[in-house]
Amino acid sequence: MKRGALIGAGAALAVAAVAAGAAGDADSRRSRRAARAGRPPMPDFRGRALWRVFTRLDHRTRLDVHDASGRDRRVLWPPRWRVCTQYPAAGAGLDRRATVVIGVLRKGEPCPHRVTAARR
Image 1 (cartoon, rainbow, N blue to C red):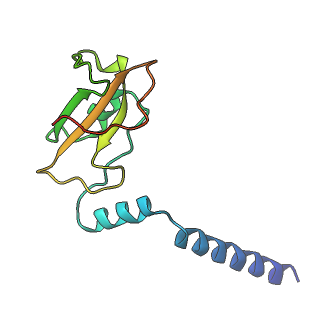
Image 2 (cartoon, one colour):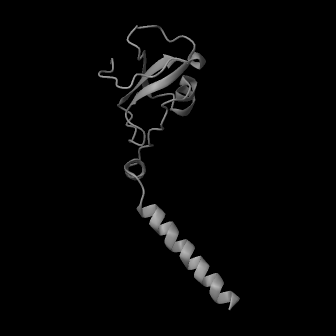
């Protein structure tokens, strides 16, 4: 009886794992597609410190960092800034020819609800 209960519990866990994998969201499907294409997926940097962008991306990646407030302030010390917007979106494949655009604000400033245009 114990062996039968153990096999039944294992089967239930396997079915639950398959169901959880099938219920994945669009971001996880996009990152899997990018990984199959040989391109690493873009991490989600929104809400994190700017220094994480520099440490997580390859040093050859073209990067455009700008002040998302529209005041055109210079970003001189990355630990004092946090990411509000990013392009490409999290999970998208990073192409070596593409430029990653990061919009930042000083820590403590609220991110705008909607950014209409990113400066490139």
